[in-house]
Structures are given as C-alpha cells and as structure tokens.
Amino acid sequence: MRRSIQEIEREIEQLLQDAPKAVIPKKLFENILSLNTKRGKRELNQALRSLEVQGKILVQPGNLVQLKGKGKVASKGASSAGNKASKGVAGNAGHNAQKSSSKNTPSNSPKNATKSTSKPSRETSKPASVHESKRNYDEHDLENIGTVDISARGDGYVALPGYDEDIRIPKKHMGTALQGDQVLVSIDSRDKRQRRISGRIDHIVKRSGYLYVGVLRHEGSGHAMIEPDQKSAHIDFYVAPEDLHGIASGHKVTFRLKEWSAPGGLPQAWQLQDLGEAGSNEGDILSILAEKQFQAEFEPEVEA
Image (tube, rainbow, N blue to C red; front, top):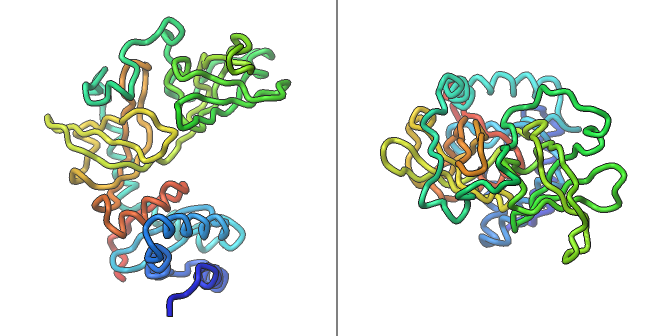
C-alpha cells in the first residue's frame, strides 16, 4: 500500500534526527512523485518546506540522496561532511570556471530576442554593476537600498524603509538585476495607471548568488544556452565552451551567474552541474531540490 505524504515526511524527519549524516533512499521522493507528475511535484515541494532543512544535498552514485542540513536537525558532523562534499565535481567545475574569460559572451542572440532587451533604453544606458559594489553610499542612498523580487511578468518590486508599499520597477528599468539582488533604487513618480510608486534600478549593490535550474541546449561553435525554469528569470543564459564540462544538450543543469554587464546583452552562466536528462524522474527530483536552493554535489569516491 502506498504511503501518505505525511508518513514519508515523518520518516525523512526521523532519519535526520537519528543521524546527522542520514542517507535517505531516493525512493521516498519517488513515492511522492508517483502520485502523479503535477501533484507529486507539489507534494514534494510541501514536504521540503515542512522539513525546514537548509543546506546541501549530496547525490551519491546509485539510488541514494543524502541531506546535509544546516537547520535545526543538523549537527557539526553534517556540516563537516558538507565541506568534504564541496571538493567533488561541482566544486572543481567552479574552480576551473573562475579561470575562464567572459570575452566570448555574445551581445545578442536571435533565439533570445524576445527575452532580452535588444537595445538599452536611455534609462538603462548605465548598466547595473555585475559584481558587489565597493562604492560608498551616503545616508540618502542607504534609505533606497533593498532586495528586488521579480514577478512572472518581469517587473521588480523593492521594499524600502519609509514606504507603505513596495516600489514597482517596470521591466524596462530593471537593468541587469536578477531575483534576490540587493539594489539601489531611484524613485521616479507615482504610477497613475497602477496608482503606486514606481522607480528604476540605478545600481547592483550585491548579487544574490542565486542557484538557477534550466535546460541546456548546444548552439554550435562550442557554446550553449540555458533556458531557466524559474519564472523570475526572463532571459536565457549564455554558456562559454570552457564552462560546459562535457554536459550533453537537453540535460537539466544547475548554474549561477558569472557575468552580466549590460541589459542589451546576455547573462553568462557558470558552475554548471548536470542533473541528468530533462524529463527523467531523477532529473525532475534534483531540479525541484535545486529550485529550493539545495546544491547537489557529486562525490565520485563514495559508492552506494
């Protein structure tokens, strides 16, 4: 008889409490997905939220998933194991990617013309900085710094002190900001149509370091594109040949932003990790976990 979602949650929770390095059979997650695809994914999301486990997930060869949390059920042992896991394939990929150059990043791609701004507007002619800013901010600036939340339509919303409502940032004034970035906002005016205060992003104060999930497609000439799964991302990411690490076209990958210097260009991805073929059961499971900001790291020396 198939177990209920509550029974599966309790079993996972008990495993984590009994042993910080608890190895959890992937079958537990597959049982949830087997309810049916749409409902299964929803149930799995709910299960992960209810467990409140924050940290890393180590995917071992074979049929096992190991949760390494930094939340209430974790211990120093789990953290140490997580540090060891970071020396696996994913960590090496990130190290190698740091040596690569971003000079091959295309300014535009016909395939992605509908998702990227073909020409920067006057308002975005000064692109938001890609890296964490080292500039000094005066008292006025500090009052206008907040974290951007991007809607499915591409507009941004930033909560600022002194305002009863979030500041709406129209898509055309988003610059190179991505979900969760800390940004400096300038207030334009109250949007008469929307009856709310609107503004624009002047500067990226700090990148979020967000972990994205998407499907990789080879485009020829050695490079590739990734279409993110997250609705908050409204542009495809470019992958340079040196950052592909042999990942096949059509596979699900996790990745992070490497560089995005101008709104008229494409953001570049790196630190790619292969989650398997898109549409596969394992790929779907790992994709859902990654969207929860769990980093999957492969440790070849561990045998299941």
